[in-house]
Structures are given as C-alpha cells and as structure tokens.
Length: 179
Image 1 (cartoon, rainbow, N blue to C red):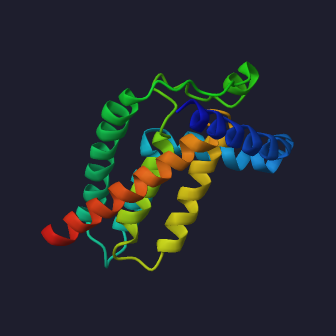
Image 2: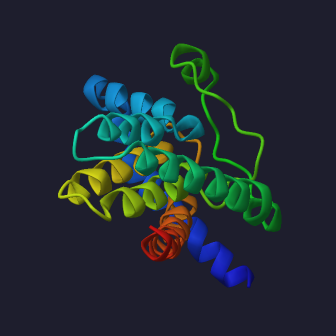
C-alpha cells in the first residue's frame, strides 16, 4: 500500500507544480477563490437551483429536491466517508487565508466535499435541463478551485468527483422514480 500512496503523492506533487503558475495570475485567482467560496456549504448549487425554480416552466419542488440531495450528500461525505480517511490538507499560505477569506475545513482532505457536492448537484440539476453541460462546467471550476487554493490535493478532488458522480446518479434515479 505504501507504493500506491507514494505514487499518488507523486501525481499530486506533479499537478501542484503544473498548477503553480496559475496561482500568480490575478484573473485565475478571482475565478478560483470566488468559486471555492461559493462552493462552501453548496451555496452555489442552492442559488442556481433557486434561480432555476423562478422560471415559469420549473417548479419550486426541484429546488427543494436539490437542497435535500445536497444535505444527504453532505452527511454522507463529510459525516461518514471523510471519517474513514485521515489525510492532511496541503499547506496553505496564511496570507491566502486572510486575503481571500477562506474557510479552513476541519475534516479530512479526502475526498473533496466541494468536488463531491459539485458533481452530485450537476447530475441532479441536469436531469431535466438543457443546461447540463453548464452545470458540469461550473462543477469542474468549483472542484479544481480546491487545488488552486491549496485546500485539497488533486487526488482528493478526483476522489470527490468520483463520489459525486456516483451519488448524483443514485439520487437522479431515485428522484426519477418518485417524481
């Protein structure tokens, strides 16, 4: 198992080194720090589903469905799955924390809750929408923002994406049966 952990660390280090030049770019910082803050507590997904519910062809129930799914996803990922892993987060420069008002999570780094929530929400919101690719693009930005701000390793984000895709598919199937 140590060989696998070592290889994962090598990949994480390579991604971090590749990403480093983007951290000096002001536009990238605005996009990724903004995305990571909007991803806190799934705020962006609650906002998007609420806006979507305002459309005459939509129902407020869809926004409630998204909120319910996000609550279940949070309990599963942050309350159960993360407890199985004791992975520390990458180093975060203290000036980034105060300058960008980042919330410091207390849970394990693996898997990324932002990535899991993002892809769960994208799957559920895409069910009856032509905007599916937009939701997945937003999910990708929110997920990768965690690498940019150094709150997750790339493998944490990958684990969160996989978790979110699975939870999103399960939730979508359940919602399709009951609605």
